[in-house]
Image (cartoon, rainbow over all chains, first blue to last red; front, side, top):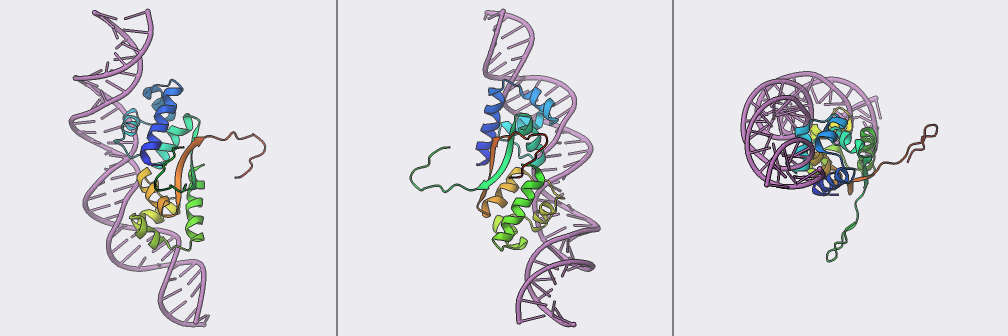
Length: 77
Length: 77
DNA sequence: CCAAAAAGAGCTTTAAAATGCACTTTCAGG
DNA sequence: CCTGAAAGTGCATTTTAAAGCTCTTTTTGG
């Protein structure tokens, strides 16, 4: 899952749960500025920061074996 | 997947592939010191740094919905 | 339409990550 | 056993993340 995909997933999840950035920041104990930077793709947060954020969203970061991507067809998840 | 689990997974994968820390550092373009810090649990790398490392190991970071953990039985993966 | 909420963005300071270098300790194989 | 390789660790410097504050722009709902 590329960086951008992680960002989009987090953002969508937050919107789906109807949580504002400010609320998520507060609930996760992460700075609002940090969250904004992350969601806008301008940040590069540490693992611990990301874990805090995704935890509140009921998500988790998982390591898995990379999916094989075929040259011609890039089937989205 | 908690921080520690991610660390252990990366380390095990590296060992499984019989790659030294030095080689992995080189192949991933991450500093050797950074990798060592990470594997020893003393570092807290950024998302981009982690992605570089796991990429070389044929792994990827994925966001998934958190698994429900039952109170009494903590079944490992 | 309008006002409040939410998101976007600039700025600055502090803390921490990244990393090269050198040295020590542990491990593995001959 | 011994030696080289690999891993562990201290240190210092540079770069970057974290985050609070403020202001601007966009969005939303009445």
